[in-house]
Length: 97
Image: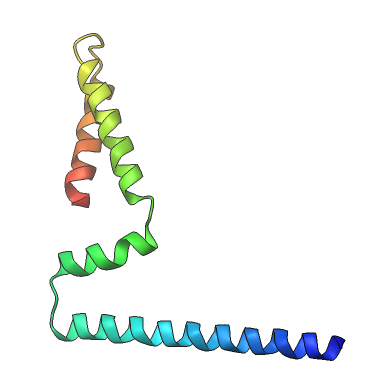
């Protein structure tokens, strides 16, 4: 009986692995098609980056929030360092787009 359970488990693992291989093949075909049709960089970035960098939007939002706070406190704190930081963060956001 224990042997039957092991055989069933092995069969499930093989079936799961086969399904994963099929999904990987589909993804390869999709990417190949996009690249062959010379999809624009923005399209490729939009399709690929969220999967690899899911926190990118969170980081951008945090930087924008920091810039807003620095902008609001600009008049209260006459600091050259804070001004440079605000400008640097703004430039990083511009370059990231």
